[in-house]
Image (cartoon, rainbow, N blue to C red):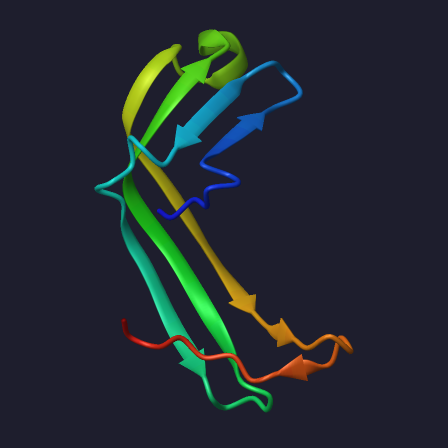
Length: 101
């Protein structure tokens, strides 16, 4: 999990009062994020697949509002897929690829 300096954490609040806080400092063992260059489209884009485990979070709100007791959780997951596209200053889509470091 990579958070930026501007956004070092994520806080999710539900309408029922459940709050889940995930921060970068406690999430060094998250796995399951893959990046795939999609060259079949022009301009090219990137697909990010999330199937992460070992997500550390702090839950407040309790069993009735969150479905789990309040406290530190270390076995969270996140699942999803997103396509990322790049645009230039004129808001036209341009090629985007992920490069190995």
